[in-house]
Amino acid sequence: MIGYITIGVSDMERAKAFYTGLFADQGAKVVNDAGRIAFIGSEPGKTMLAVCEPYDGNDCNSGNGGMIAFPVTTKDEAGAMYDKAISLGATCDGEPGQRIPDRFYGAYVRDPDGNKLCFYIFG
Image 1 (spheres, helix red, strand yellow):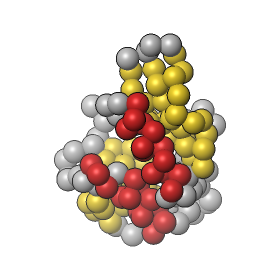
Image 2 (image 1 turned 90 degrees about the horizontal axis):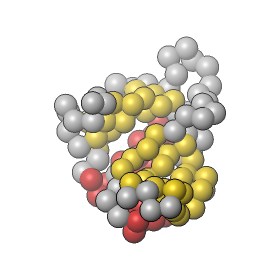
Image 3 (image 1 turned 135 degrees about the horizontal axis):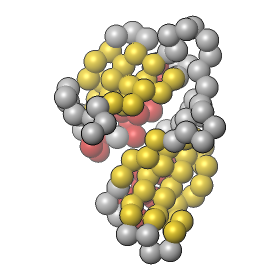
């Protein structure tokens, strides 16, 4: 249902390196780079993440309460994605753990620009 999500960044090269590194195991690469915006995914036409310097020229900022959640298949994978994000420069915003007993497991980080990410599994 989602074609792509766009997040504002302050350093395009850092953002491209962070997200292609974070999702390298899923075949992520820069699919289209137009200078101030780059689309990261496995191939055109699939769901992508766009990193973008804000069009209005103002500083980017992360929304309070906004978050991008990426599904994983196991708790171990959630932990591995969390660890990888931290190694690529993210900061902890909630260590991997059970959030809703027997229903929701998540791990939370903030990317280098402060955007909140979650790696989660239901069940």
